[in-house]
Structure formats: C-alpha cells, structure tokens
Image (cartoon, helix red, strand yellow):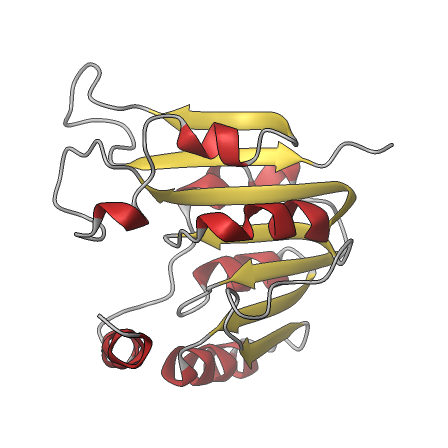
Length: 195
C-alpha cells in the first residue's frame, strides 16, 4: 500500500462518527507519573485521546497526525472542552519528527516507526517521560494491524528505548488466562535521566 492509499484509509477511518477519542492504557494507568506542568506531544495522535487526557492534566499539548480529518475532529473536541492548551496540527511525524530537547512528555500509541526511536529519545528534555503502547506480533485477538512490520517482536520495545531508564513495562505474551490482562500490546514508560 502506498502513502496516498494509506492516508485515504486513515481519513475514512477517522471520519467514522462512531469512533471516539480514547487514551492509551499505558497513559491512563500511569497518569500519576505525569509532571504537574510542561510541554507534551501526542504523536500520530489520531482522534487525540492521549492529547485530551494530557491537556486535562494541565500540560500544554502538541498533537500531530497526518490525517486532516482526525486533526479537525480533535480541534473541534478541544474547543468544545475549553482546552486552549491543546494545539492540533496536521504533521507527518515520520517526515518531520520533533526537535531535540523539546518535550517533557511524549506519548505514542498504536503507531510503530522504528526509525523514529532515536529522534523520540532526543526530543525528550532531561527528566522527560516517554509513554509508548503499540501492538505485538504475539497476539491473542485479531486487534491491530495485519502487517507484521507494524507489530513489535517479543521485548522489542525495551531495545528500541534502552537508552532511557525504564519506569514501567508490560508485555504479557500468551501467559496465563488469555481472557484477562492487556493482550496483544506492549506498554512502556521511560525517562530520559538528567545528566
């Protein structure tokens, strides 16, 4: 699938009125780790569930996605919620990653572009946190992308962000009762340790 077809697919998906913004579980469950203030980024944000949670927590938020439909919907949601600290922007994160030492918090969910890992690490300010959640190849359900290139191998997320201090990690694989837990995903919270 070429870039244009991929964008068309996302525009159609984000235009579905039944879809609602939903924050990633890694952020919901670890919200207590967020700083009281600062600049956050929700990258490849889709409808902006993470961005909305970050803005409601009092952070100034940049939310980037290449889908104009998703960004317009997020902009309308932010306006309706009085969240002037949330700035949605149409931006291809892979083509234009964040600049170095720009953010106190970066959130990425349901998106995997391995080549971005060094840029994401560099984009964190000292003491900054990365919240990352995406799909794994070892799956229990049919959720997530069909292409294995867009899924993590076992413990791959730890390797991609090994330069950061891991503060939380969860990847359940196929252990135990498969009807329970957080299956099909890996979740990470990591800190760029101060020099």
